Length: 301
Image (cartoon, rainbow, N blue to C red; front, side, top):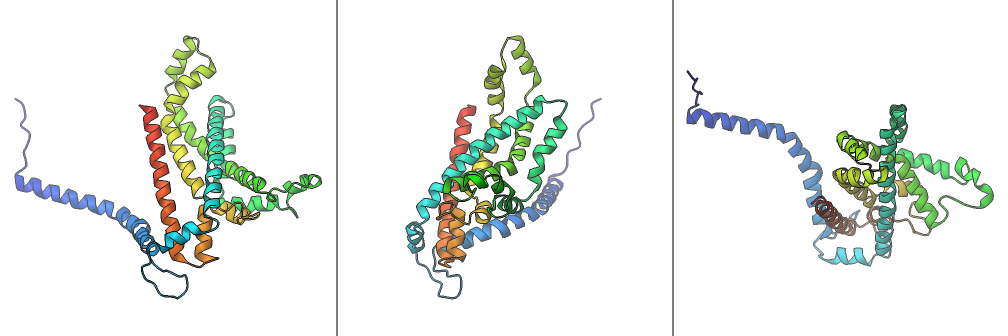
């Protein structure tokens, strides 16, 4: 005889549902409070500041829309900072994604030295970006830096020209983050079934054909994640340029975040204009990330 399932009375089911809902809210409340305090409230404050007179020290505070945005666009470094930030983002993204994928393939293929290679490539990722920037600042120093000493006879300085400063900073970023992106790529590679590679070898496919037809298509979700992370981090670059170049030489390495910092705390001391720049940077970042997601989604289809 089949056992009948016990049905709870409607009132009891309602009480259980309310209790579970309360428990769910309690579990979610720490994260909700964290997001409200560290994201929502600061975002609302920045929006208010962007439409108001908001000097760093003293002064009257009142609405002035759209004066802050007009002053932000009229800043003499506004266009140059955007162009340089995009240039840096393009170079850093291509190098990091390409090198990260290459290192992941190398680690995956090497069975004997796999653990040693993983640790070696990941060691720089354990160092903070500010600490790594200070380390490379000493290495690049024309007075006591060992790297500059090797090139003393050539007259070359790592931070002396705009292109040299850009690529010296990119080298720092690649050294610092290549191991991290290698790890992400390696996780994606290990998620590809080995049977597919075996079937491809049986069919006579070479390494390049296998890489193009199997590895890249199945690695697209990982490539999408790493590209979005790399582009976002590069567009928000600050510490490396602030420590290494301070915007020089000749204000040629000013990023958009450096410009925001300079307007807020160094030159104009105007938090309202800095907030307007921050709002424009946030909107641009949202549009760029949405475009990337759309592009990768179209590719997957």
